[in-house]
Image 1 (spheres, helix red, strand yellow):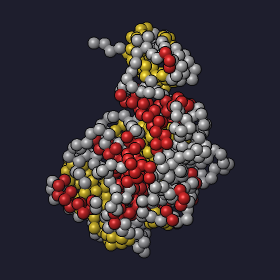
Image 2 (cartoon, rainbow, N blue to C red; image 1 turned 60 degrees about the vertical axis):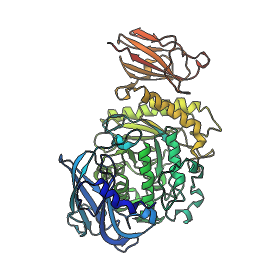
Image 3 (cartoon, one colour; image 1 turned 90 degrees about the vertical axis):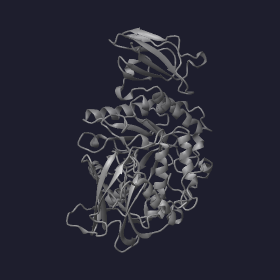
Image 4 (cartoon, one colour; image 1 turned 30 degrees about the vertical axis):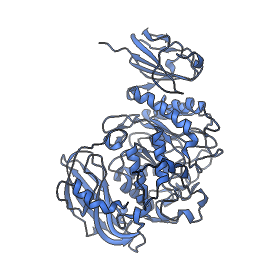
Amino acid sequence: MNLFKFALPLLLFFSIQPLSAQEIQGELKQWHKITLIFNGPETSEQAEENPFLNYRLNVTFTHESGEKRIIPGYYASDGDAANSGSTSGNIWKAHIAPHKTGKWTYEVDFKKGKWAAVRTSEKLKSGSFMDGLKGTFTVLASDKTGRDFRGKGQLQYQGSRYLKFANGETFLKCGADAPENFLAYDQFDGTFQNDGHKDELVKTWSPHLQDWKEGDPTWKEGKGKEIIGAINYLASKGMNVFSFLTMNIAGDDQNVFPYVDYDTWDRFDTSKLDQWEILFEHADKLGMFLHFKTLEHENQGLLDNGGTGLYTKLYYRELIARFGHHLALNWNLAEETGDWTETPPTFPLDALERIRLAEYISSIDAYKHHLVIHNGDWYDPIYGPNTKFTGASLQTNNEKFINVHPWTLKVLKEAKDAGKVWAVAVDEPGDHRHSLIPDAEDPSHDIPRKNALWGAMMAGAWGTEWYFGYEHPHSDLTLQDYRSRDLWWEQGKICLDFFNDNSIPVSNMEPNDSLVSSDGDYVLAEEGQTYVVYLKNGGESTLDFGSSDGTYEVSWYNPRAGGALQKGKVKSISGSGKQSLGLPPSKKDRTSDWVVLVQARKTE
């Protein structure tokens, strides 16, 4: 279906007053995507006057309270490139997901000049057309519920270890870090399928055609079903995140980039990027966090030799203009920034350039999304309140996942000691050779469950994403069937269910493994109130309540099978100091891993 043909009826349905933009598209509701569409200069992706570089579209949106947001816009060819495949036209767009109900006004700033898109100079001349255009619209409350992010609002870093939605809900994530070339899909437009650069790695996602549902989006009269089905499948397993590279021209795959071709870095493929947007918009409705990995290790020196120059600024501006309105995402500045296996690192993005790039992104991202970077080089130079980084995307390097828990603790402590609490996610637990291997080779997944899934969460991470090693089928480059880890996604959901269904107050809790007597086990504690104890090998342990002299209810949770909380022989504990937690409730599984939830008894 060509949705663009229905834009006018949508406008008439959702608008409640005349609007002075040429067109406004979308539901005029809080946190919903609203698109301003303008008739600008007739041009094309290959025009001599580069529409991506030599024009700058910004729209200032002002709420009736006086709050302002300056949103970058972009050239959109004919306005329906996802379906038409058009490379030319006179349509320009800007998206906003308004954070407040009520009256909004907008004013358009459209400038023209050499490198205008990446310049802030006030000497740029008017681009005519919609420059100076003003208008108003009124935003009503959202009607969305459930997993749909539009019912929760923007996910925000708020100076703590955990990201929270505008409605106050804490977000804990689990999902897929692989394949990194997720977007190398043969039904996206572009030349990557046959440009001679590792074309054999281009994906069909055919195993997930079965997961597409009637009513789900497509483009070009039915394309896209397989990749839409892939994220449908992950969501159906209770996962809430997937990651993807947006540029890997010089990397392992070389099939993902936003440009018109492999060698042109200042002109964007408008139809391909519109098709990406259809996928991302569907993900919002499913409650799927978007992990934008914007550079791969091998690409860190490609644009501007690793500096924050023309090509780099243009690249990030286009990403933010097109996708910054999405409610739950992070900008990851680079995968494997530097690499501890090489001396000196290949294409090192040094600390000063990391900081400069973060500042540039923050300056044009009106939503101030979570800003992270993948390690390789360690984080020391970018800690502290004087950088725009708000967390870490942590990678580890041991096939047994033994570094996940201690490294998470290390980053969190170092960041806090440097003056800024970070939100840390473990986005590549394990090593590059194995990491999370398929169900067929390891159906129980005991080691990753104990050391990484729960190891990360119990150290204070806000979630995990799962990488698939190169020495196994369905790897980080070759995976096209998420069912290869079907049993693992169930374990991930079991972990999320424990924290969410039992309303564990993670924001008030601190990791403190010294409180439990058994070596290698984990504790998250709001001392005197709530304790979560993870026992890797079950058995009987003691928990140190210190001087907190109270009465506590003791419950057990099975991290292998999930389900309701269970009671063991010790149902409650009274007193201070070291107290026995008793034995797990199931005799046959007493040497397996268990979670113990200890909560202060509520007084009437």
